[in-house]
Image (cartoon, rainbow, N blue to C red; front, side, top):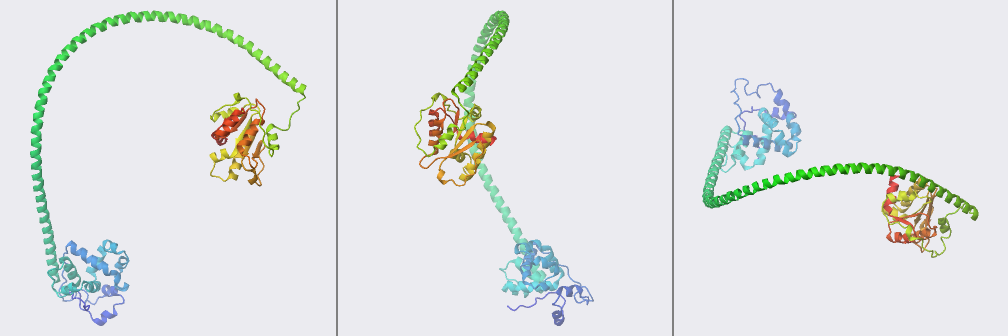
Length: 483
């Protein structure tokens, strides 16, 4: 369909040449034109009619159509207030720019004509029919009114009024249909309520019969309860008389108990006096026992000094574990088991501090068994370094001998020096750290406290048979954490 400028009875007829010269800035032409041709009220011409009152659906449709064609207009043909609106997203353009779009359509006939040309081109046959002043019977009255408002052909106000009447008729029809539907629903609910009421009435009749039957039963039960109550009251009177008798007996027994209590208190005072005398005697006897014990210990100490002098025992430079380390490459021999009485099977973490407080204690640690349980996420080198550093702190605090044993000496190169007081051993090829630990325990003399830290049950059972004290790895890990 050829695009033609729709008729607008409010737009003054302009000279085509002058209009072509004004396309550079249509806003300036509309605002600054003071010739009187653009003012419908200027001169002797008829006064401009007021804008018609549009139904809300028609107004929304006009804004939607205008918002849809805004981005298709050249920038210089879009009024300044609408240039920002034209950049909005399609779903926001009609919603947020509705007031500005409506104001520009009313105030700027030239902009309305440009919008109308695009809208009519999109409307097709319906747009052509509206321009001619007719509307198909099957057309949407809202769409017809929106196109008539924009195109403004002859009789466009009648088209808008007819559309408004159609919209109002549809709204009234919808209201009437809704009222009919509500009336039908109320009638259905009333019929349902009536049926429910009949069912409830039947239930109530049955319930009334049942209640009457229960009432008769309750009356019979009430008579029985009354008879039972009278019998109970008679028994209560007898029980009250017996209670009074027993209270008299209890009062006499209480007097007897008070007398016995006074006699017991007198005997207790005599016993406390005798206990005081006995404590004084025991304190004197303990003083004598302490003097005897001190003399005995002094005699044992002097005897030990004399025995050391008699045997000419000089201080040694090596400990038993050092001899095991020196002979490490040799086959381990079978040594006699120590006394089993020295073994203590306990996993109490506090036992570690108690055992390390013993004189000349030797702490033997199953290295990887402890590190993999406490900080297994580290590399083996970091595990060894962290454990050896912690054992160095324990050796410095307690002054005890500390030995830590690891598996696989053939894979160790460039090991850092061990802290003072800590001996680091690696099992040789073909021998495990467990066997080396048992060898260290067998090398110790009977009577020396040897503490082995390992969560391996086989290691714990083996060293216990040789008289050592096995403890779990958690006891050492908690001791290191506390340090």
